[in-house]
Image 1 (cartoon, each protein chain N blue to C red):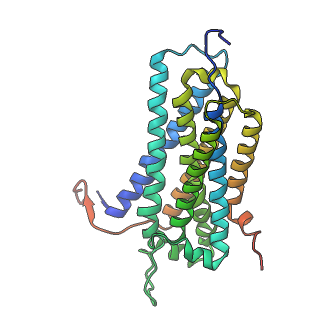
Image 2 (tube, helix red, strand yellow; image 1 turned 90 degrees about the vertical axis):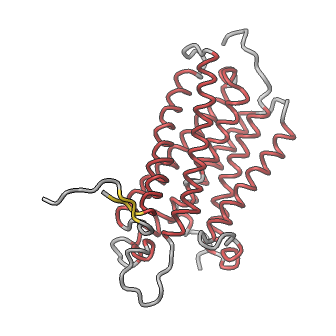
Image 3 (cartoon, each protein chain N blue to C red; image 1 turned 180 degrees about the horizontal axis):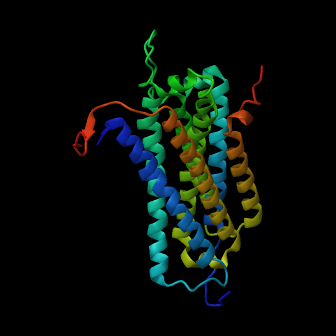
Length: 189
Length: 111
């Protein structure tokens, strides 16, 4: 069982930071809806402190996801092959663009993902800052609460777009290369 | 609503909300312009391996933070028309999600 260094980083970016963010996002939406609406379940100081840390962690995850994506994975994805290269496995963007059956994964999928993904950290940073400032008193601010919930929902959608296209692009043209990391030595049968 | 719960001014929150909408919208506009205008595309290459995406996203973050700082300076400690702020922020956010979708972005700068 082995994985290339680039494959591992892609995994950390997508399933680690991105996947965890999506999971956390669904939890935040439920929590905001259940607890922080007017007349919602009672909020203890401990609940409030927990949710502050929760949103702070989500903010960190979102920024880690976009920065590793843009500055680590994306340069490997968009690397240009020397002229005359036939084997495009190490050049995912060029591999996708080499066939009409896969080119839209780049022209629509990657082009959308690489920009839409940034809406997630912007939105969740705002939600986190507002919650940090207002805490449970956000219950008395229906407009602020609606905006926070709306932006968290949009960040969920943006992260979902990025996750879906990231997974599909990596399925069609995986980012591979670099040193091989061996996990387990298998046996021949 | 519990009468004991205090109601702090909404200016800080409204500034953060509108700034997020402005930042998101700036991102989508910069993405379109950098994709369609060659000179801007070149100008947006701040980190060569990442290409124009580096300049587009960093510029959008700067616009967002600047808008946030300005709005917060003006609105902090005050109550503002939060419903109007929300409407504007959601329009900007919705537009940004729409404008980052390549088939929509391709409608601009058509030759």
